[in-house]
Image 1 (tube, rainbow, N blue to C red):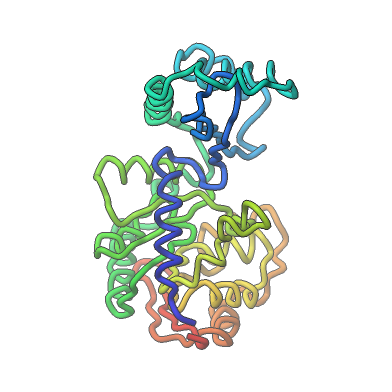
Image 2 (image 1 turned 120 degrees about the vertical axis):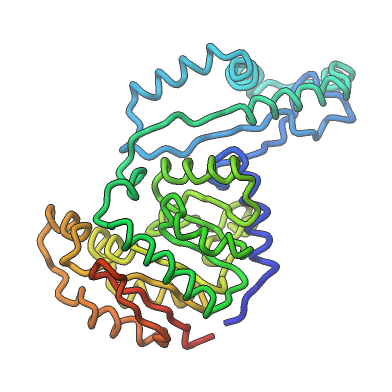
Length: 339
């Protein structure tokens, strides 16, 4: 498999638009609205940007939704650009509008002022802090400081050995290890399912003006599909690859045990996403795996270092294997056999 750098660059630039406001790209739409008050010049100007936040049912109750809706009405920018705009759309929905009604009502300068006002509102949005399952992962794990530092050193060593042109970090959390790549000047996309972790990383990126890190929300077990007309306007996650190197650190047990995905299936999927792989195997004796097994029957007899290596050997050549000091976790550097 060869790297499609142009596709990767398109992914980076398109997703950066959504990352600038900390939301997933497929949740951002820019509808063309034609309603009374838009002059001829601005007839096809986007008169509003509809920003919708993707929230899982488990993290958002109806009471929370009602409170959020009430609070947005107390902010003039959100009141005018969301609620009043929605009321106007509702008022004119399905009504025939004469051509004369579309002329001369709003000047181009007024339209520009409207858009600048909306842009200022969006830029001023801040997601509130929330407690999520993995948002404080690095403060609630079994790593000693020495083991954590040793793991980061090994990841950097593997990156230097593989010399990738681009990196995707799957299950990146707040990107403590993704930065081993981005700090080397490698374009790095950091995916995670935890909204709080992604938001923390986004704020760090903005605060430090990082140029090579792009944090994105994504559920790897239900990744972004192709969107738009005929599902081809915006590429799916798989279509945006393969990337040069994928990192999957402390991720395999979540896929194999928490989501019941066979190790062979995980290996086959990674082989389609990447030419090279840095992957961590966390054994059953680890407290994080024990945490997952506490609420389910252990039906995973093949979840062993030997079973893991056998499953991945069909798709990858194992180039390096290192036991992470101070733990029983194993770090692998692999090369896709098809690349």
